[in-house]
Image (tube, rainbow, N blue to C red; front, side, top):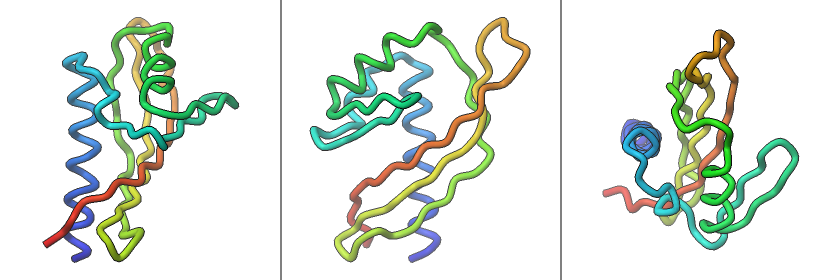
Length: 109
């Protein structure tokens, strides 16, 4: 079970980065109850989160993942994924550090 949880967490992170790279809507990853905290601002729901991400002052970035930690969060298939790493922006020498936690529900068999 632990291996399955880790594989699902990695696949989720890879999929979200893929969506960013090919510029598909990230709103498909968020639910009405999703929340994003960004520099002190709290955003709720897929529409508000997507709108905020589209307003960022860059349109490309390279993700350098440092850690992906996944664990079950409920007996019904919930998984919490914590990701940390850096973003490399075009023309920027210094990396921007980031961390993100994701709670998703997937039925493991």
